[in-house]
Length: 265
Image 1 (cartoon, one colour):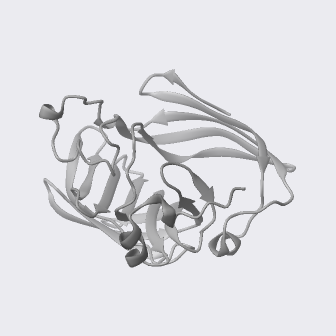
Image 2 (cartoon, helix red, strand yellow):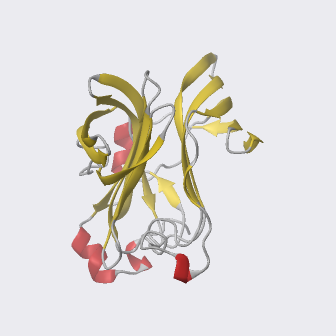
């Protein structure tokens, strides 16, 4: 696997040559992915930024940090960048070759994450034919600041959005699969509708790591491609939402890694 910059902050190479599994969304909703037949998957893509990078750099001086900089559920005190992309290249599996030309998004962060009190996350983005793009992130935590930020790029100007309110998650296959998102810009309130086009649940463990598939209890995240409509314009992007499977009360009561069930020997 290779992920490397061709031109920093502008273009990247993304490649993979390895094993892949054919799975059903419903199988992953029932539990973590087990062993099974594999097929070879080859991916060779070039990712080109269609917006400038947005986010924040490394801050180590606590006197210069604001509430978001000190929110460990977002990225601790580390780097967190977002950027809208266009991806071109090929994807091969079995006897199929797909010439890929589509939109994408780069989410790059480093630094410690603290998720034990994190009870809801919504992360969404999309690119539209007019050239505008958006990104929004919610992080709801107990006893720490709630993060609701993002950007809109109109092809010329990058603007911070405020009061982002992304879609919630209530089930391991992405329920509800029709949803909405709201945020504020200088032009006023913006309302988007979205439709989930596919789902891949994962379960996150403390302090780090995740497995494909939904555990009976813990932080389940569902990722998937989404169609978004904004002022009548149709665009495509991604949606990631988290859900506390087994109940938030159980997580709140323990507030420690014991809630995360390890399936390793």
